[in-house]
Image (cartoon, rainbow, N blue to C red; front, top):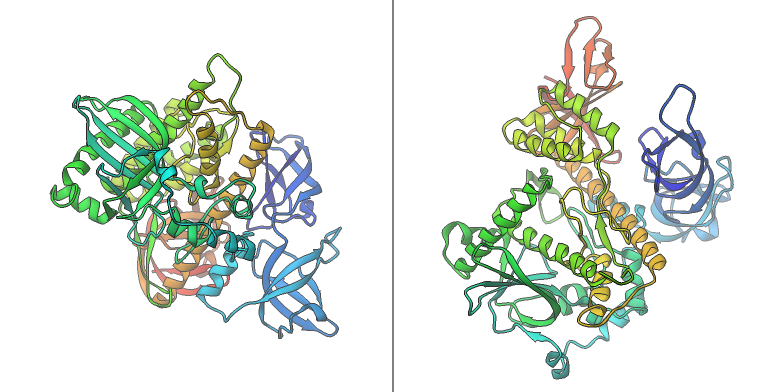
Length: 629
């Protein structure tokens, strides 16, 4: 089989093989020289008496990255770079003439020039960049480089982007539907610079309401086959860390030409919907348009407008919110899952150091935009499928989400029962209903909130594919990504294919090539999500550095042989209380839901409320050590 390496903290890994329900366990020894994210070929077997398959790597097909960040050590006639990422358990040998005159102990970027053929050999490389001083900025760069993302755009890509004209010719406007005189606005985060969607609103002569979902027409500027396009595909996504964005497109496009800034004419690709008096969609239209946004709202400003019904477009916002509520209600009625998990946010000082950690408050303004984007994404996929009725398939980029893993759901169910929550899991529909009941219960009981990330982990990962199996989590038979082409290459592909299939035209992309692109984009998306999680973890530890010696309330969020993990209630920072600080050995029960003191009989179980003292922090390892109070 072939699959991607997903390494664990212990150095072992699980190989995620396409078409195989269970991930294949590979011991650290069985990995050979394979690293996290590598595409590998493995031999697989099921040990006697066990149900889970195991395997070993027999061939590395494709490396996830050939660039690493590490610390250089000068030793005689050569240098050794020790990678910063603990998942990269190898030293890289560098000839002294290839060190760029780095000094002992410097942080560097090293590019592999020759991979090792066996674990006993060392790969060789050359230093490409000397990195700056230790600190938060460097660590964020290290995270990005560690996931294989380039910090800067190649010179030829920047040159191409700067050469694109910002003038919109009259001939281009004449080919488009003109929305410039219709009330239009954007709603985005306060600090956003790339606005890739806008909503327009008007009442039609028949009394129905027309809502336009207008998306930046990136493909007008991003031509297939250009250096700009190749680089966008290579990146496939913008990466959002706590204190920065690494964009998919150069700033000239992402923040300027394509961004739907207020009081400027902008080229868009639109999905326009007509709603009747029952707030039902009675017609839809897709095509190229030109808009002129009248107002840029932050989510907070739009929310104030919704609550006070005062200010710019207050009436329009109120009616759009009503329609959004109807769309949401319909979705949940059809079996969609409410995965509204807690999202950690930071307030940073001028140096990027966190001064506050808080949980983002999701209100109607956020969900209003989300609901109209979901509608557009769904309707685009439905349009393509209706187009190919009674004719050959039109290959398209679908956003798919499979049913959850049965075994993982059973484990979650046992875990939930231990915390006092009963799940029904006989059918996918029952599982979805149980997840939604859990989300409601979590609003009342903090301990149940611990179950939400675990519930998400039972799910298949959403991904891109030319084979449509529907989207389980959203309860949609057809779904795509159309609404964020500034930051997702999947949407760029969707725009190109949709445009070529408007009206009487029919266009069929090479399906096998499109599927390869889907795989690459899905992989890049996962790397970006891992980078985002790492940056959050780093900033949480950085925040807790200033709180060593203080006491906080928390919940037991995990149990391992060495101790218990505790998640702090307010900041959601997680640390560990080692059993060695509790003056007695503990017996950890199967399933790791509880631990019992061997002398005192004291029991800790998942979800228990505890008070902890912050003992120390380790930024390098992203760890917080705690002690029970």
